[in-house]
Image (cartoon, rainbow, N blue to C red; front, side, top):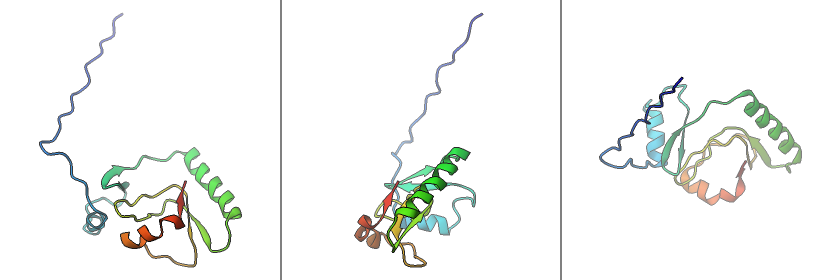
Length: 123
């Protein structure tokens, strides 16, 4: 019995290289409804990426990590899960991050985020 293996499809490159976008452009796209409600995208260093689906083990790991970190943190610090962190060229949504606490936080502007980079750590 023989197996036929087809050649991989050749991907054609666009005539112009894709352009990076700014955080402002990303926010404008969200506001304009460019992405569907259930479309999971993330801006990383100016590039848009589709986020992968999560499995049960992933969700369990996030919950377990949160519980451990919440017990270890000093007052004034919070544990967030999958909340956007705005930087100069990105808006990642890390699985778990440690951020300064103090009640409801508004999303930082890129200039505010650059000044507070040392205040949070993504895991």
